[in-house]
Image 1 (cartoon, helix red, strand yellow):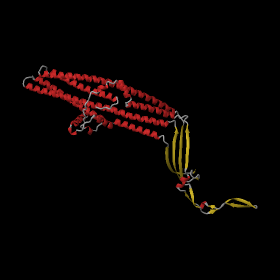
Image 2 (image 1 turned 180 degrees about the vertical axis):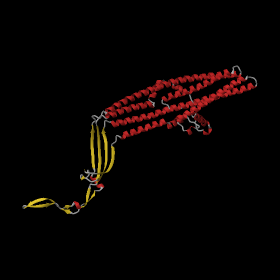
Image 3 (image 1 turned 30 degrees about the vertical axis):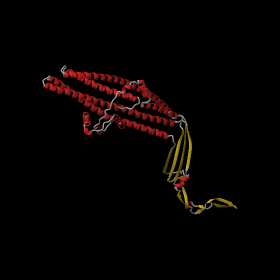
Image 4 (image 1 turned 120 degrees about the horizontal axis):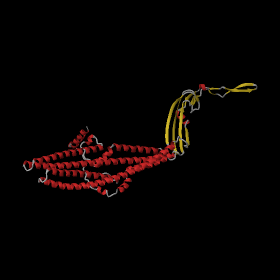
Length: 479
């Protein structure tokens, strides 16, 4: 199945009916930034950190809550709004508005906000670091395509040369001037070079496929995909005038992975201060407004009949006389209705303001344990910073050594190609004069071809190695 997909990709890429504009390196990198899943996930981490910072900033403001309740009470109880004893079912409701403010909490919230700010910076640097890694991967894949394309051109040129030799030898054989065995040798060489060309074509196809997969192109977008061949220079030689130590000192202040580690150090320091603040007394100011409504809160709508009732006796002249009350409404003849909602809210309106001091004495060692964990996290952040800076130094030292070795290999391969080119030209003339046989000629030609392929390999390896050094110096990856 994979082989079928590869050949289908090659067929579509080579079909002019699906032709499209060629992509340069910058377009490939930009597309990878927009579509790479790892980049998108890192961008989501940045958004999470932004939300966390926003929450911690707003957490410094007073809280404000409001609400309402409505319910029924059954059985014996004292109604809170009328202070009357009730046994029947009574419906009640209340409204409230409350707020609280942390006056002092050991600066725990403020330090937590600063820690979240540093976490946000770290996540942004992480995103940049991932983009840098993607850029290097795309650059390497891009150069692999260019290298394989040039190797294919070498194979095609060799076939053209050999084909000319075959055509010439056929004429000589037909004229009886050369033995047919020499023609067979050339045809055998031509067949081998055609096989080499197929191998080179497959290498181009596979490298293009690798690049499109790295870019995560959709199937339709990958059809006819091709890249621009830039003009490469040897400017990378100048980069080696810097020492590995010079490059490291500059990269240490530029690389996002180092800056992310520094931000996490600061975040851990603020987080420690935040947890230490939990050991201090806290002072909170809170207040509330409220009111309510009850069915038991009633008003008289009809006074009814006036009546009196005995309230005692009095002795006058030895006679005991009854004493009645002043005339007053008879409750049995009065009419009542529940007091309206607005009046009850106004009558029952209440306010509360309080200042609360909380002193932590013992809470299951939770606050102290949080402080100890924060100290460990701070030590871990410091070690992570050391590890990242050490790894950066190791990577730069290795990249510098690789670039220097690649330069020496490239320069040596250039000299080898120049020397073997002259040797091949000389052998070609001698072969045409039948001074040497086909075996010796093909040997020289094969050596020349291999030298060209080796030079291309060392050339693009040198370009990539120097691009890495240029990247560590803070320059964008370009070709």
